[in-house]
Image (cartoon, rainbow, N blue to C red):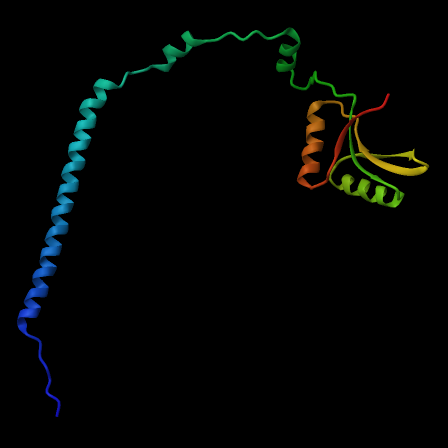
Length: 165
């Protein structure tokens, strides 16, 4: 028969001693952290009130006003934002050029779904007819930028051109 081995009571005493010393160490560290945090806070309060200048921005800001000269034309545009002085009469966006009229109509329909009104202009180049899909001319820089952003968001390539007179 196998003999049952028993553990010595000294092993248990030793393990409990190690556990108790670990708990005491953790409590000691906790007290040190609390004490150092309180000392830091007192130190900050005592030095903080001496070093920080008190600024009352209600009294400081009016003294720092900077007058920016604005032309009368710009002032009208600021007061009435519906007036857009930057007219871009000469800019158009060419979105595609196709030999097939069906492909040009397809792209025009795709642009219509995006809320853009396209036109198809036919041109003869080297005895071949090309159908150009164009947007514009745009009445303002804002509308031109909006159209460009819509094209970029939908991954449609474009080329900005000046409108032929």
